[in-house]
Image 1: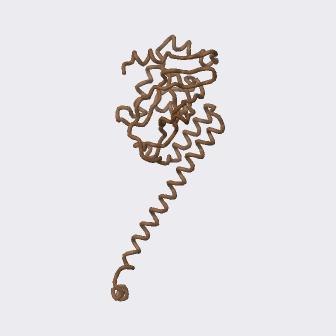
Image 2 (image 1 turned 180 degrees about the vertical axis):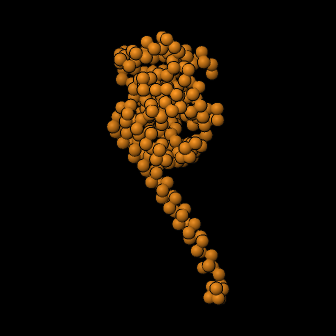
Length: 220
């Protein structure tokens, strides 16, 4: 995928009304190439995104958006965070809420690096994002390449960053509670699995003596 083709694709917007932030970014886009990016995980948090892109990303936020025809899930294990991280999967009966950014093209490679594109952790996906009275076409997001068969719990750090981004960028309260509940249940399940594994290990250490001959157990 060439840079030129990406830039031309990212111009597709159906709009009736523009907000002040959008008008400001429209003026900035005239000065340098821009692209649209939809974040649904930790990148919803502009503070955390700044850590990867190297500059303040608050001014690049368009606002909350909806990705229709996909559902959210923790179907990847981050090699750096050592926990489950978010992914989106096609589902005609679902939708995913997130944050729409308009980023300078010079930050594109940094975003790919954050998402592990060269390591085939995530790949780019072109989608449509819905906002009030607007449909943004040819928007970049990222999806997991090799998906897990079942969801893996996030750690506390990832949990907090995702939730902070959702709240900070104005996602609906009910969706923020949905994120909290989903991540909390995954963590609870993970803790229960760990408890069962510890119990099984403890039992396996004490079990062998039960199968020794009675004379052996008495003499010992």
